[in-house]
Image (cartoon, rainbow, N blue to C red; front, side, top):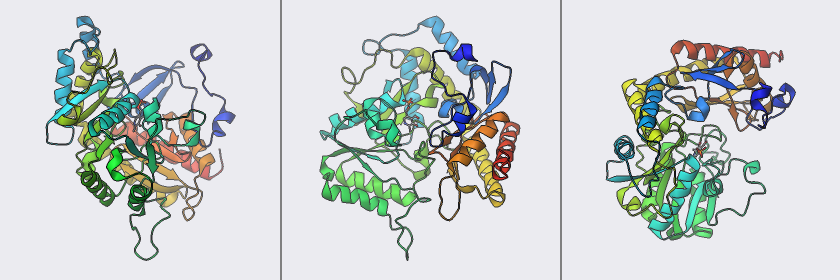
Length: 438
Ligand code: PLP
């Protein structure tokens, strides 16, 4: 292990790990091989993967069809800068992305390398198309770490500290977080105060007619799988339409079947002006894309939106294979079914385990919010780190968000048997932590 990680900064001591609290836990994990939902380390241990490389490996690790597509394309040619030449893999993939993404209107596609730089491109495209400069994002959003994406992101202070100045004219508003909402009216319940905050921003600081785009994660992922209510999304679409603001939906984490639909936008019948794609698009090969209304992307590209190695044919071939696999293996439906089953199992666990405060999400993008007390909803950070580490010791790799939300995101190809084993491990870990055994 030490030979493998030398030169890398990896936290590996157990006591440090437990004290991480608000951070994502890093385990002494060096992967020798990975197949399907199983990771194999250098000591021959087999570990169930409940992270999918952070929703990158939706079709499972090293799916043979993805591997084959990569090998075959590598034999043909490795790359040509897309500013100067196109190739069949890129054209075919663009057509496929247009077909599977929401919105029955003419679209265009622009390729890049990561979710972060695709979001940067989305800022540029939105500004250049609307001739407006201001963009709005959400507190606790995560859109990546390139400067534009980082400027949109607001997961926590450590992510931004000492890195400013950021891209100007980016404003943040509260995301509709119903579980931890403290703005409900005492008599009528939800009064959509989060929507009022957007309107207040328009009335006080940022005139709506100066806003180019609003960036939305359809489920806010890295803040702990927060699902907005449908009424909020409906109102947001209306506000955008009424004011000529583009709605950019970041499906980097939630796309490609993860939530039991091809894209999480479909849970809201949402047809975004621009959709940002990445992560699982090419099963781990570096590829990302924007899919946008034709008129928005037409004429866009070099010189402001091109990357020398974007739209790489090997990555595009991997993406085409990934889309075929999702369709042929029925992974969208499978994610929905396994997701419903997983949520049911957690609901049953909630009856017995006071640590479980809330269970959120759809398909296999689920967050299990662990609390010290269901009334106060105080985040059970130490307990969560212990549960996660106990799972690790028992052969399940599971991480957490916001210090206390277990992240349930296995590959969509996971078998029912593997899933059951993983859920049993989580329940055992909850028992161990609640009983003070660890
Ligand atoms: N957008 C969302 C919603 C994400 O979850 C992430 C990564 O976690 C990104 C963008 C950034 O993607 P990348 O890490 O490929 O730059």
